[in-house]
Image 1 (spheres, rainbow, N blue to C red):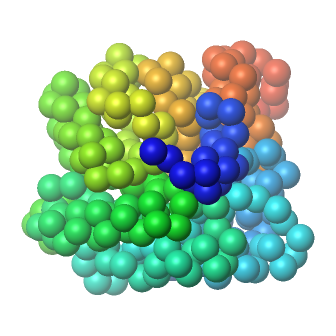
Image 2 (cartoon, one colour):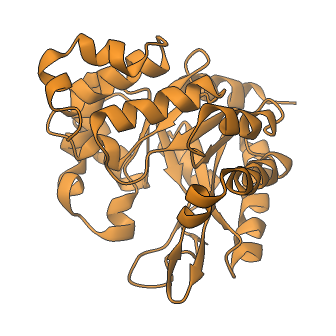
Length: 281
């Protein structure tokens, strides 16, 4: 059974049935570049746009809360950097610390099929047990990803060449998280609503949200959000798609229109003539 603490906190992260979450954890992974040079200002901007929650590392919550920004926070308890073995996520914090800091949820990242997958699964299972003890929602970040020939392999060739096999891999990622106790699963969008519907069907009723990946056109980002929601997703967790925009609040508002209000991308862009003209950029 879900504890009362989990229920209350989860309702902050996913108000109603859907969420627009923005992850800010890439500054630890890649360094403070581009939109993450000043993450506290970026959090203020996504809050102005109506984002529902933020995902990141603990210091960010302290800094934006001290500046008066009120936005639910999910603490990532695992980390790696591109300077080391990027696909190997290790525990860097605890559920107890997240409770003390006033977090609304915690996250654990597992790269499924990587050489270090067993260690990451062990961390996920241990954190899930602690989350039950503390009444803390667990968001499992489950990507089909491995190190191959010294570089990240995100199975993009498989996604383009054999959508069914790629969807099967993503389904497996989601089911692993569900079986080990996740309350929310973040994973990759498979590319179309039909194949993604098979992913959400595999979640056994647990909410699934999708990652945004590298920045695309506004139309492309909204299209992926719409396709995921059409396929049963509970929302999006778009980082680079969001904080690398010129108008961050405006982009978040467009995401909300798609995710929360069910508008199609063309309808959203039709209400933004200036944006529509440059939406391919």
